[in-house]
Length: 364
Image (cartoon, rainbow, N blue to C red):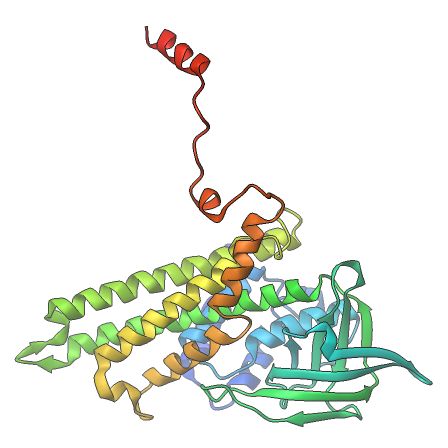
């Protein structure tokens, strides 16, 4: 995709989010943003994963209550599975092997089990998920209206649907070899969450700066007080760090699927994206609400639309503690003599007498 096409796509998305149409999801679908990862020949835009994450950052920046991340990946997985005609697919990225059973019935394969906290599960047309690891990993696609699917509605703190789907001998629309395993799907979903979080943190910063320049206390804007300036400066650093971490994570996806990088289960950038954006979200929410005071907690003010999402998204697709453990294991794997400190701060090789003499001779 050329830079001009990428810029046009970005501007079109920005215009839609800024206009805030009542039927936002329908407008995004009509414009093809839900299929952005698919090739143009299949009705998509053929964007890279980094470009897709850029669109998600815009969605987070505007607190868009739409399943854009899930639909993008859902359409990509359904295309791999050969399933056509899906309206709004979603993904279940945190499926444990013991939660799903695939057996044989008289009419073919049957799937039973439970999919917990599926994003927009009640409103989707299809749900895609992966079970198993390595070459045994299977991609399963189930239509929501299929017999045997029951749904228990749920919500996260921000009010976004997080539903439980119980599958009772469901006939799947597809069971195929997965393009990657369940752990990598979780890593991928975590990076997409990071992109959404980076956008929301950026908006929290913009709102805080604007309010600090407008709110007058003791005869001058509160943004003139040093303590407030220091807090906003800290918020700005967190917003920049979150965006950089999310971009590094999205680049890791493109490198991996393009054959130039390591799998996400071995990548350092993948867990780091979720860890760093989660840490940034914690500080960003605290500082933004300190700047706004009581008004920031009211339903009438828009700040809570971003902070509630950040608090929710921190825990989804693995929180900082989960990915920190994962990152530590990745750094230390395969080297019994390695320590985390040595990995983070490499030690210089010990200097030998011969090396010292060689340096001395060179100096002379």
